[in-house]
Length: 544
Ligand code: FAD
Ligand code: SIN
Image 1: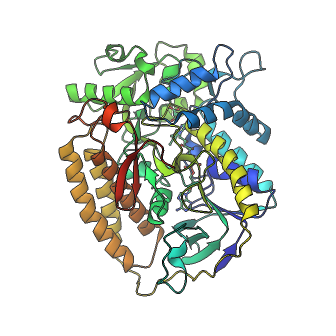
Image 2 (image 1 turned 135 degrees about the horizontal axis):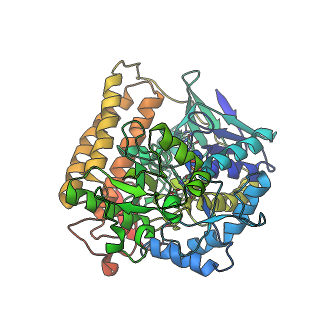
Image 3 (image 1 turned 90 degrees about the vertical axis):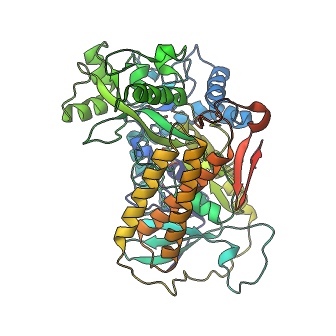
């Protein structure tokens, strides 16, 4: 089956939905999403969205905090861009219908505080900001006559020159994207989605690790697809671990928002000792890479399985009111956060790298735009400042919509004749145990060898293992009729391999990449982005 639209969007999180709303006046829009429409990282966001509204705050201060968290790798122009777009992004969401939590006067926003921020600047909807953003954007999209969302459709590959009939031609120059092949899970058929403009807004990669705050959709599909199509990807060694995921057998990796620490909660060892003051002047609100590493160190020092977050010293009624979702979840597990410590551990949370884009979401592939967590825009550098990612997704999707509109108006050529998906030589295999086993193996390997603290020995082992597992998966993929589980496994393994390549390459410690064999930051040799293009890997000051 062939579908055609003026604009094609992969992903229904904040990046994809906000782009759709901004572009839909220009033409028809199809959004593909691989599970149900609200299944996204966006839906789980708790803390909120960073933007300058406090009268004591300033753009300069937000920029400085972002650059400091990024540990020397942020692109100052990209940071400047999102910070100045902050108030406008919040205003757009408010107009679309997001009811942000108001301050006492009822006129302004109640601004939260999170790690690395020197001012209160987190606009939020209590501790359910993501859910409010996701459901509001979905409501607006549902009302729009030009936008169609197709659920249970997983994009497999970007369609480029590589897929054109009559092979043999050399396409050395510009690569174009004309849409995607996608598996429609309700019919089990691969369908062709054609468009002159494709936006990849496929989100993050947390599922590559055994323990993650990310939902099941975050398997790095967009990064893997774009890389296979020839787009450069960058900075994948910078996987952010959130310091405080709940440590509980019945709720692995439920997030305890950094906003709880911003509200006054303190990290403690099992013996009740507050430890962050030993490590950083901002104590429990130091940047995330530092807090996660300190927790890891304290746990290893004592052989403890977790540390604790102590909110017991705070006003109980205010805590319950400000964090209703977290409080309720903990009560279900018989933890009263107003009277007991919360057991927490770090977990994989956010991919700072991604597909390289310019400040308008353009990539090295014509007609392909990328925004949100799948993109590497230069904003986050070596470590993302808390609550800057929803802001980045919204700000860059607005800018990408403007540049996509220009591109659409200028690109008048008809689409080339695209062949249907070719599955000759593939069969239904019954070896599903291989898929679940390989998925577990990749996730465990990444957790054990490519985690918060790395060494050359562990990284080299990880690289050897992933090569073997990756080749086995690729061989199995080539002879097997595609399923969602197989496609995700292939992308997961490929993303893991790319993360490891970047981590092996960088011989220093910076931001989220900490290698005990090179414990210092080395600005003379390594102050650049790790850029991967096919087999090539190199350091570049600016990626695109
Ligand atoms: P997502 O929201 O993840 O959307 C990706 C979409 O792509 C999904 O619909 C998915 O199904 C779809 N998709 C993926 N692959 C395919 C495919 N092959 N085919 C079709 N569809 C596909 N950030 C903040 O700024 N503030 C916060 O408070 C905050 N809290 C967070 C809390 C948690 C628990 C988590 C996990 C993240 C948090 N983040 C926060 C990060 C932030 O939520 C994400 O970075 C952001 O939502 C990413 O938006 P996105 O649109 O790029 O991706
Ligand atoms: C949180 O609420 O702690 C998550 C914020 C973020 O990831 O930006």
